[in-house]
Figure 1 (cartoon, one colour):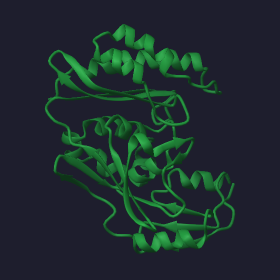
Figure 2 (cartoon, one colour; figure 1 turned 180 degrees about the vertical axis):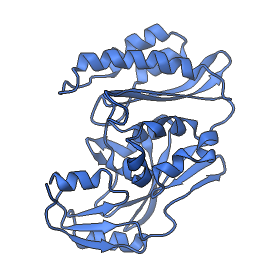
Figure 3 (cartoon, rainbow, N blue to C red; figure 1 turned 120 degrees about the vertical axis):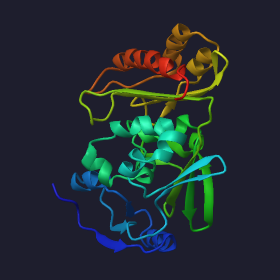
Amino acid sequence: MKPAPFAYAKARSVDQAIELLGSAPGDAKLLAGGQSLMATLNMRLSAPKLLIDLNGIGGLSGIAINSGTIEIGAMTRHVEIERSDHIAQHAPLIALAMPHIGHAAIRNRGTFGGSIAFADPAAELPACLLALNGEVEIAGPKGKRTVKADDFFKGLFETALGPQDVLTAIRVPAASKDTRVGFAEFARRHGDYAMVGLAAAAHANGQALADVRLCYFGVGATPVRARKAEAVLAAGSLDDAVKALAADLDPPDDIQATGATRKHLAGVLLRRVARQLMEPRP
């Protein structure tokens, strides 16, 4: 299929992108990497009147370390993050997730900010952002604001972004010596969206774990924190944490798997990821 007709504009600044969004209220889409957007356009699941290209805006990509925080520009390509020594050292959870995102061709064009803004509930990076207790920087007609990951994902493909907002950067705390992370997913084929996935972060507390955050993807309309399982795992019982998932997760049935299958797989992934969380950082 081919997309419905639309007008095209290439923004040269964030302010211009915001103005262009305001010129077509509710009928404009932002183009970053386009790896999700182009598919929805071609299938006419999305039919904007105006497509605003962000690729001409300088200063929206790059990886920086500032005061114990890793800042990733929204237009930073997946491949840059995958190959970054800074990410490997200071944001190891994101490094673990990157090879699972699509295929190499997709990672060459796709952007970190695009994945977060699109908020596909089966995508890896939104769950990683939530697990790391990160935040996003948003520019809008009233200026810039920061939104915590816990408050950013609102519903199916729905976020805290307003109709004239542009996501400009993502920030996560830099890993420390006691940071522990784990990542695993189950997909029918490598590169497919995961049927179930788990991104996790914690801090070592002697032989135990503290500040545990278990964030599942592919099990609901948004990334889902398994809060009861987090508390039980921090208390030291993996078996009971797996049992607690029954209260944390309510995945739907679809053509890929039943909700019961997904719950079972969630427990399998928790056992795998828990072993990773107990491993000291290299």
